[in-house]
Amino acid sequence: MAHFAELDQNNIVLRVCVVADEHEADGENWCADFWGGVWKQTSYNGNMRHNFAGIGYTFDEGVNAFYTPQPYPSWALDSVYIWQPPTPYPDDGEDYDWNEDGLSWVLA
Image 1: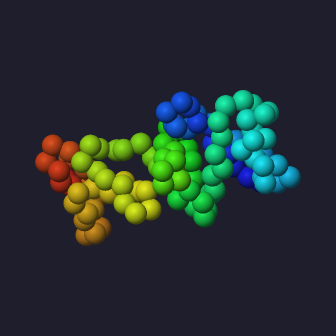
Image 2: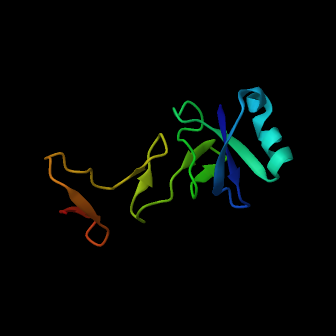
């Protein structure tokens, strides 16, 4: 089975659908013909377009990647299109929450 994401006019994912293998080769066009709209293939294992698409994700045509909504204004996308904080998450075994005002992790 192949997965395809429908995009709105701003390249935001509206839904993700599964289509039969026989439609995978021309799946983006098949989805557009069947449901209408603009479609891009996505993959659970990340072997295409960096991340599996989800509702609300962005598709960036320039880099051919899906990525989640930005969690905080200070976070930046890394080379595999995952949002990263300006300060790495502590690895001391404790649970932390991000504090955007202080740009730091605080104990949960």
